[in-house]
Image (cartoon, rainbow, N blue to C red):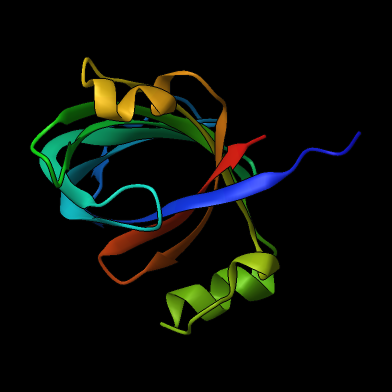
Length: 150
């Protein structure tokens, strides 16, 4: 049986300038501050608080992502977000992104998996399923379409 994906909301996460930590010749560790954002969709609305960051390690052409931040739902509830995934794109796509072109998410591999925590009963559904994201970069933002795996 094939998995069914239910679109639940979109994240538009505002990010600051990356901080390069570095590691070795084969790995490069960076930290990108999360400074705000919005949450809009059929099952959740709210905002991304300016608390958290994305720790990302590049190894060759692949980047491993590890982001943690807080969503404040429209009803005031706090939702902890752990979002991990992978990014890679071909040289042509990288060149187009650096040039400021809009690149559709289908042309790059920018996929994530979420774990949510909250004590809010209204949002308990977030803690009881697996969620995946299809992301794309935009200037100053990462935009992620979030789906519940049914």
